[in-house]
Length: 467
Ligand code: IFM
Image (tube, rainbow, N blue to C red):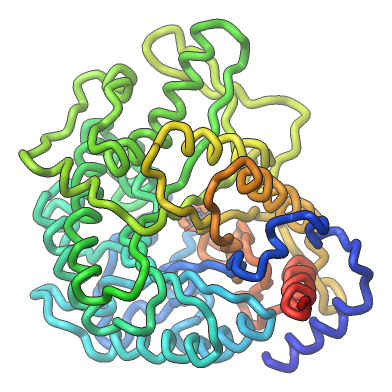
C-alpha cells in the first residue's frame, strides 16, 4: 500500500497548481495549523464482529433483521480493517493526511460486567501507537452508534443507567489510552442515535416514537456530561468534546408559516442538541413541534450536560427545503433542478458557512470547531486502475471554501476531516453508497486511491513544502 501512495504523489505532481481541488492562495486552508484529516467509524470498517471476545452490538442485531438494511448487508466483514489496519494506516499517512478520526467499538473492549477485554483494547492500543509513530493527530470517538446489545436489552438509551455505564466505559478507555489520543469525542451525532434510532426507526435499535427520541437524547447528553470530567481527570492533556451533525433548513416561500417551518427544522436538528450543551436548557420550540414529548430531567442534569468543552465537532452534509405542514410542524419540499449526490442529498455548501456563522451569534460560549465530517457518496467505479470522482472533488473544494468563508467571518475553525477515508458500511444503505476518498473492492478488499484523495495529498504536500 505504501507503494500505491507514492505513485499517488507522482501522478498528482503532473498536474499544475490550479487543479480542480487546490484552494485559492488567500484561503485559510493554507495555514499549516489547520488540521486536514479523514474519518471512519468502528462498525463501518472493522468487520471481525465475532473475534477476540467482541460482544454483539445493536447494529449486528439490526442488520441481521430482514428488511432493515439495503440488500441485507451487515458490518460482519466491512473493510476488514481489524486485520488490515497496518496497511490502512500506511495508506492514510502516505496520503499526507495529518489527522485521523476513528471510533472505538464499546462491545469490543468491555464485557457485560464492565471488565476490560484485553484483546479488544490491544487492537486500539496498537492502532493508536502506530498513528502516533506516523505523527498523525488522533481524534477518538467513544460512541459511534455500536451500543452493546446487552445494554439495549436493558432499555438502551431509554434507560438512564446506560449513561452511567457510558461514563464507566469512558473511564476505562481514558485510563488505558491516555497519551495516544489528542482529542476525545464522547458521542457521534446524538441526533442520529436518538431520532433515527428511537424516533423513526431508520437506525438501530429501530424504535419509532418521538417521546422515546427525546428521552434517549436526554440520556445520551447526560452520558456525555458524565463522561467529560472523567476524561479530563484521566487524560488532562487531551482535548474533549462532542460531535454533532447539523442541518440547514430553508423556507420554501417567504410566508411567515414557511419561515417558522424552517426555524422549527433547525430547532429539531441543531438546537435540540446544541442548546442543552451550550445553554443548559432544551429549546421550548421543540415541544411545540412534538407536543407532550418533554423528557424526564432530574435536578442537576442540565448542569452536568452543559459542562464546558474544549471543542465542538460539526458534521455537515446537505440542506432541506421545507414548508409548513399546516399544523405545528414542517414538511420537506425537495427542490427541482439542484445538484444532488448518490444519497439524493442536495449539494449546498452555503448551508455550512451560514450555520457556522449563525452558531457564533447564538452561542457566546461556542468552543473552537472542527469539521469532523463532510463528504459525499457517489457510485464510483475503478476504470483502468483509477477512480475519477469528479463530483466529489468539486464538492470538497466548495465546502472547504465555505469553511474558509466562516473563518473569515470570525468563526474559530481549526480543522476538517473528510468523510470518509474509505468506502464503508453506510448503515441502512449498506455498501451501495460510497463515501470514501479511497475505493474499496469488497470482494478482494483492494483499496484504490480515488482522484479526490490524490488531489488532497498533492495540496498537503505543497502546503508542507511552503516556508
Ligand atoms: O456514514 C455516516 C457516518 O457514520 C455519520 N455521519 C454521516 C455519514 C454519512 O451518512
